[in-house]
Amino acid sequence: MSARSKATFGQVASGARDEALYLILRVLRLPLDSPGSVMRRRLPAAQSAAVGEALRRRFVDREPAAYITGEAWLGGLRFHVDERVLIPRSYFVEVLEGQVDPWIGDPARVTRAADVCTGSGCLAVLLARHFKGAMVDATDLIAGALEVAAANVRLHRLSGRVRLLEGDLLLPAGAARYDVILSNPPYEPSARVDRLPLEFRREPRVALDGGSDGLQTIRRLVRQAAARLRPRGILMIEVGGCREAFEREFAHLEPHWFHTQDGSDCVCLIQVERLARRHGRARS
Ligand SMILES: C[S@@+](CC[C@H](N)C(=O)[O-])C[C@H]1O[C@@H](n2cnc3c(N)ncnc32)[C@H](O)[C@@H]1O
Image 1 (cartoon, protein in one colour):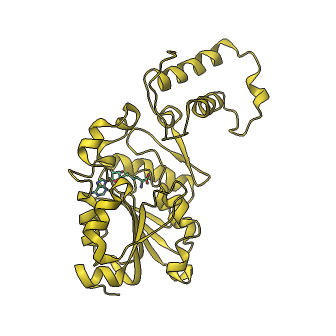
Image 2 (image 1 turned 45 degrees about the vertical axis):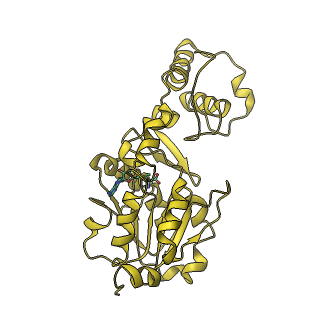
């Protein structure tokens, strides 16, 4: 392995040491919380070769660690992943934990929710686990992504409550209306996607590319959501680095920005009353 690896991080761990450790433990099928002493032993040749190959793929070929192991973790939950889906790392994991309920009142009133742009299905699973009485629709444009999502819905035993739908944003759900719609859509400006480090460019472009200004998908989602929310419904969108552009364009919707630990505060909530005033009429 080259000592000058240009590997970049942020998809699985934040640095080389943690990511190498993660790969070694996974290849050796050891628990992720194994004590450091497990590293101080001689490995049989086959295991040593398997570890070497995983590290070569990560640090020389610069494959994301999650695609090498076929798994990713979000909110303490394990998800299947492969090259058909974005590696789960959404800020919604922070937001759903404690920040959303004050906007809902009684979480039990949420009986229908949607995860738009579901990818691996990770947020649909978190949504269904948070709103325990809700049926969740999860949509994605890409059939292959929905196959991964289906595996994750089965893994978390939510097949009875999460429905996977193929198509553009909310369109495949027909006339369904929701108490909660959330989305982590593609939001990187196209030119920025072109310049991303190799590991990130190995993720599906359709999961990242939000068009020339990053807001192309978001704009259409805001328009569609206006007619797809029930009274007192909420729309929540992760907008990444597009927060300023989003605020300029959608200030009239008075978005509330949730706090995130890294200070990016890039997930917003819009109430249906504001959307309906501008983009259509909310009906029950
Ligand atoms: C940023 S990824 C988010 C995946 C997952 N929700 C997460 O947080 O890890 C965006 C996803 O949106 C999907 N997508 C892109 N454009 C779409 C559209 N117009 N309608 C539905 N899904 C779309 C992509 O296939 C990709 O799976």
